[in-house]
Length: 241
Image 1 (tube, one colour):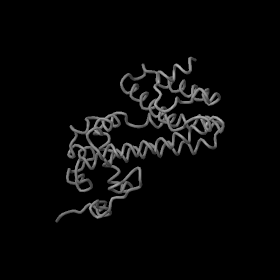
Image 2: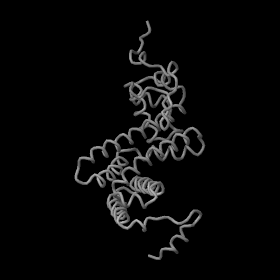
Image 3: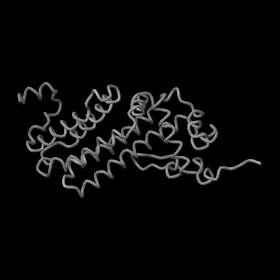
Image 4: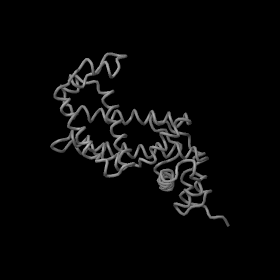
């Protein structure tokens, strides 16, 4: 007699229409404990061995499950990769949003919020992010999801920047390019720490970056951008300081 997994009965991807919530479309139910466990295990395997070298059987083995159970929820490894990307990134954004909300009751919510971004990056998996960045070059769906998730992250960062710079600074600073700069710094520092370890002194670097942001907020003109089409060299020439 065949034993039916009771957890599996609660949800089957083939019986569920894909949900499109804008930035993080889901084809499976993240609230299903079995699905969440598979996604977490897959993220670890992908970060450890890469997308190409990881099989569904290895992901199942990570949880003590048969490959058929993993395949029951995910039609292919590509579908699993897409879902892992959205799932892990949404967990990251949730941590950042919770930290920013908690910062609202502190004495220095702006800096707490910006530090929360870095803390969330540290809790994430840089190896998995590197895999996503690499694979998205040849995977249009992965790239589309990455773009949508980046936009979500940018909005969260813009909220933090408004608090950090204050009303006067935020009104005089182009927040979108500045938030892109912050994201680039966060990603770059995370990769540096991943490659170099403690020698990179990324924590000190990020604290220095926050200090520069705060100083720029007091003097908004220092954070202004050049006219459209202007090169970084032209901008530097126009501001010899």
